[in-house]
Image 1 (cartoon, rainbow over the protein chains, first blue to last red):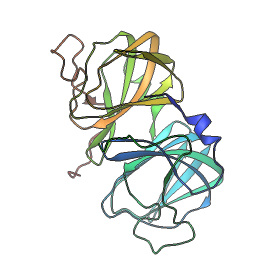
Image 2 (image 1 turned 45 degrees about the horizontal axis):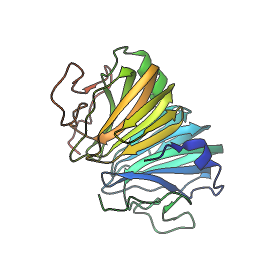
Image 3 (image 1 turned 90 degrees about the vertical axis):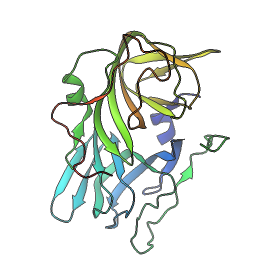
Amino acid sequence: MQPINLSACLRQFSEHWSPRIIASLNDQEVKLAKFQGAFDWHAHDDEDELFLVVHGEFTMEFRDRSVVLREGELIVVPRGVEHRPVAEQECHVLLFEPAGIVNTGNAIESDKTNPATWLEGLAPPSAPS
Amino acid sequence: MQPINLSACLRQFSEHWSPRIIASLNDQEVKLAKFQGAFDWHAHDDEDELFLVVHGEFTMEFRDRSVVLREGELIVVPRGVEHRPVAEQECHVLLFEPAGIVNTGNAIESDKTNPATWLEGLAPPSAPS
């Protein structure tokens, strides 16, 4: 039960599209990710996903429209909805989603498929929740 | 699927210890709350709770120690752990926790017991998740 400082966590890694888990609770995970460029189109069949912009901005593209998300703004992408985050410049994002979700969803595995790993120095709760 | 701006949401209410739901996903809810003063000691038997400071700072008191949380810092309070948030000055906090949780936990109902309600203008998803 230590405070987790988002900026300090973000300084610990630089890879894009490579989410780091920073907390878990109620079978959900909190992750930080750095976006830059265009991600893959994908959907998650069974999981809703929340994106909260910590620094910068990005565009969440849907098949029929796009939504720009700026610092201090969040969006929930419901399960089953195809989406593609695109960031012209590096953008730092906090994600809330069920544990075990794969970042590229039900898309064919790609070079952007990255299993989320715990940020170094943080650890999952010792007892299963 | 509209962006939800935390600052704009926070301008919509002023009551302390009266959480507003701003999003829901995967049977969890995202809430905003304004803390000022000392809350009640309580625990949640079956729910872990996440607190992320959006503006200001507060102290999370536990029975054996205290943790100061500043802007951009989060903490997870595991189920069953007694805690009491205390804010000397008004502090704005984002909470992430299971839907239906009661803010005063398993404590005797008090004047601080407030069922979370959806922030005006926002609404739960039309279909059950």
